[in-house]
Amino acid sequence: MEDLIELENVSIVREGKTILKDINFKMDSSENWAIIGRNGSGKSFLLRILSGNLFPSTGIVKIFGKQLGFVNIWDLRKEIGFVSDHLQREYDRETRVINVIYSGFFASNGLYQDVTDEMKEKVVDILEFLEIFHLRDRVFGHLSSGEQKKVLIARSLVFSPKLLIFDEPCNNLDLASKEDVLHSIQKLVQKGHNIVFVTHHIEEIIPQINNVLFLKEGKIIKSGDKVKMMNKKLLNNLLSYKFGVVKKNGWYYFKHF
Image (cartoon, rainbow, N blue to C red; front, top):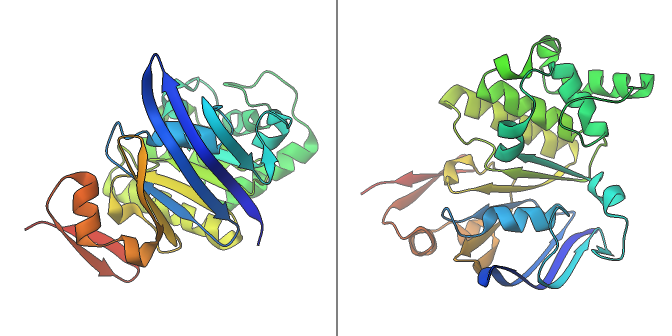
């Protein structure tokens, strides 16, 4: 097993406000994690740290055994694919889909550099794997939200990253689009990618996720094996809401009283 991520006593403070406090977390290559918490719990800040896009105010962050602050961060980020609502909202909407994906090689919003034949071959493989080859010449802003999400997943794969991080990937998707995106994420795990998946909807947690972390008011209140974590008492406490939990074929669902 390979160590992927280790956080030791990590905190984030902004303008005197503590957003994350004393976060301790470890992930290895046998694990896939879901991070669950209400809006404002600090989930997105935690993901930015895990992806190497944010340095903590205090604490130690190691990604693939390399400590932030003592490693070339740009090389490190190539090994992490990050898919977020923020990028989907901010990306240049007039860019063709194929160029959106090419831009992943350059970490740019839009394409402003020449693409090599090797890059072109890699992107064709990704398009075919995600079953979106037919979208390659469409304009990004003309796609549905679900199609845009799959294009951004494709963009995140250009360097064949070890780790994929998804920040609420099913947000604002209809049922059919949600199922399509979750199916793509399952295929990526089956292909060998490790994932961290943030959500507050337990029905989005794919069966391949084997560990869960509960984040509340910037603190980890509990983490560990998914089967032990996904119970009514713990989830009711986390989300401050009363409901039951039903498991079916490896998936979990809320059951309202």
